[in-house]
Image (cartoon, rainbow, N blue to C red; front, top):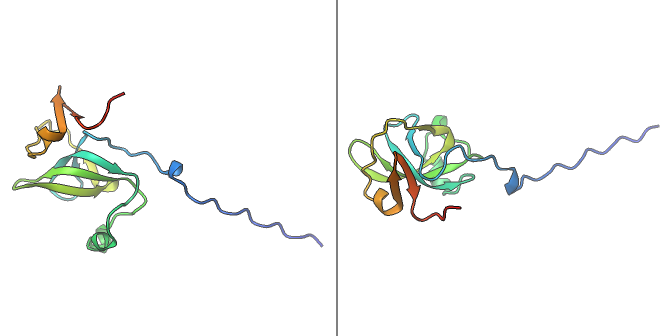
Amino acid sequence: MKTPKKAAPRKKKVASEFRLAKYSIGDVVKHRHHPFRGIIFDVDPVFNSTEEWWLSIPEDRRPRKDQPFYHLLAENEKTEYIAYVSEQNLLPDESGVPLRHPQVGELFTQKDGQYRANYVQQH
């Protein structure tokens, strides 16, 4: 009688297996469903906010946690604010319209339509 083979142990997911973020610091993006746009000033490789925040999103619009999330200096027609948005809900903003958020000038330098972070050391 043959002895059954043991199943190989499952590998745990490690940080090196995170997928790369589609967007970078300084990219101007817009929300896929809501009328706002912004500039990325930080990236989390996976969800890194509170469970309360995540559950406050309607279930049919709630993003997966296993994707990059972006911190934005965001603005809509009426106001400026900070937003935390999943990659699946972002699109590139190719309007070329300058951002008016008051912190853009503190954190970024604009040259030839591109935003470079003042706080990130360039290599």
